[in-house]
Length: 152
Image (cartoon, rainbow, N blue to C red):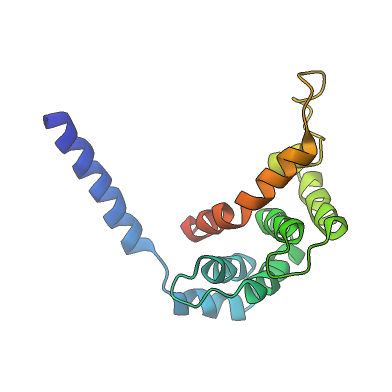
């Protein structure tokens, strides 16, 4: 019972700390408007998740593209997945692959795996990259959105 209480208190403290350090929607909007890549990715994330704003996948894609063009590798993977799934943009595997390629050139493991360029996978069990890409593309936008919002 005592162990449970300690775990509960620790989790509560972490949650409270996260709330104190969280940026407001207005602060995120201001950074995005100033051209900050992480700010743009965070604002896109708010639009993807519908936190503090209405869900707007088209606006999310526009902002994520701006962040990706500035070289934010996670934004490149996120917009690639959005093109793969047609989230906020017309689905386009060619454009998605171009964004995955940019991220892979920077050593992004997920992008490399999606493209079948992960050196760890070579010579191992046969792997269906198309199936993995589809599965990953469905999960990436929301998962990465949560990750962006946790960054300082």
